[in-house]
Amino acid sequence: MKKIGVLTSGGDSPGMNAAIRAVVRTAIFHELEVVGIRHGYAGLMNGDFLPMDRSSVADIIHRGGTILLSARSEEFKTLEGRKKAYQKLQDEGIEGLVVIGGDGSFRGAKKLAEEFDFPVIGVPATIDNDIPCTDYSIGFDTAMNTVIDAINKIRDTATSHERTFVVETMGRHAGFLTLMSGLAGGAESILIPEMPFDIDDVIEKLKHGYARGKLHSIILVAEGIGDDFKTNRDINESKAFAIGKIIQEKTGFETRVIILGHLQRGGSPTALDRILASRLGAKAVELLLAGEKGKMVGIIHDEVKAFDIEYALNQKKELNEDIYHLAHILSL
Ligand code: F6P
Image 1 (cartoon, rainbow, N blue to C red):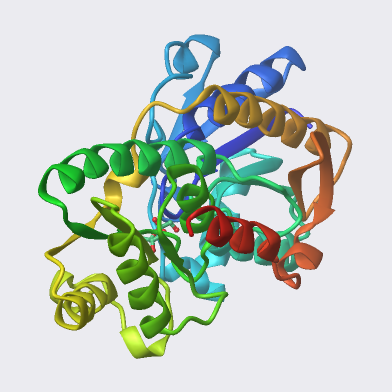
Image 2 (cartoon, rainbow, N blue to C red):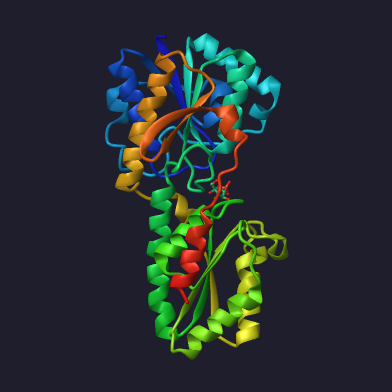
């Protein structure tokens, strides 16, 4: 193998740049040429290529976002689109590909590997942390810290005005980000898609809190919670607003709603995310050099491991219910 490509795809996450840096520098260390592919799979189909050397990834380890830019591509979901992409890889002489992204990006990687017998390795990067076969995905730790920072600030003003705040967090269909941020941020209630809840229990808990002198309450709501609180990203349709309305009506407490939104995707990656990205990015290149294809890298109990992407995509990442119950007990 002489030349590899690297791209970032789907929703960006802090630490993607650190992963690109690790891929490029590990590849160069092993005397491979590296091509950066801009705009994810869309750029791959259009041949949006950028030759990369050591200095092209200098001064990026601390930067959020992705220097290669990211996109979600409908065309790549079609066989025609993937044929186009494969042809571009052939034309450019790229013999292996590292895909940094979430589960949608992994589905594309799996198809490319299967249909064209092409060596592709996936590196998990999403603030949702919903990818199986890895304890953590790149960006999750930073996003948690961003949510906690937001909760701290909200708590200040909530206390001053003795208000209840409903805070909506990202995570798509998963509650990992909400649960862990809720535990670390000391939220009164954590509402996530994986755990059914009764809004009346949430309200009772709030009332008890106020009865024993609490000056504020924070309810953390995952954007993906159930059908009763239909969500889309239209702010007026947000489930958090629906919940805030019910709470205000049923308790009479002054309630405010805040949607943290895309600020959870930005910011300088934490040390943990930079380290994770460096380890996973390097391992992806080593797997390509070892002749592997259709694999993803993950971290399990602090050990970097490889799994078949197909196997990973057939698993469901389980939420730790003990943590959910612990958060409840600690907030009583
Ligand atoms: O998958 C990452 C994520 O930020 C989800 O948490 C969220 O639901 C989605 O992407 C938002 O997507 P977009 O940036 O396309 O609005």
